[in-house]
Image (cartoon, rainbow, N blue to C red; front, side, top):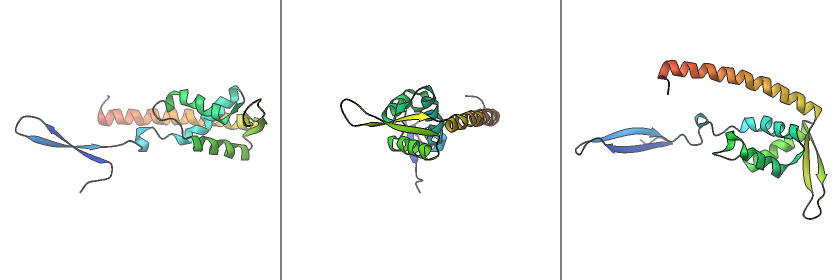
Length: 145
């Protein structure tokens, strides 16, 4: 029986023997750390704290961040989060008129958004401490890498 995400690798350890090794494909699995969509909100808010931005510029700046180097953020998800934060009054937006091209929504962090971002920072510090504890536990169980 072949499990989802399971890849069977056959490696020769000598000319006469073949050994089967179980290798799992963890691409897309939360354990890969590449699906950090919940962390998009504080990342977007931190960018908006620096300056008002339109959605496309938010996407460009997020792609430059280390957490998105291997897998850029989902464009639809970023716009969904911006709309959600606007409904929650964490960000405000206004239409930016341009000489050429369509008007763009310009987002700015509100006072409520700043308070929320400060809470995010406290939460992420707590997560960091928890992750450090888990890494210590894993090092004791598996040995350091």
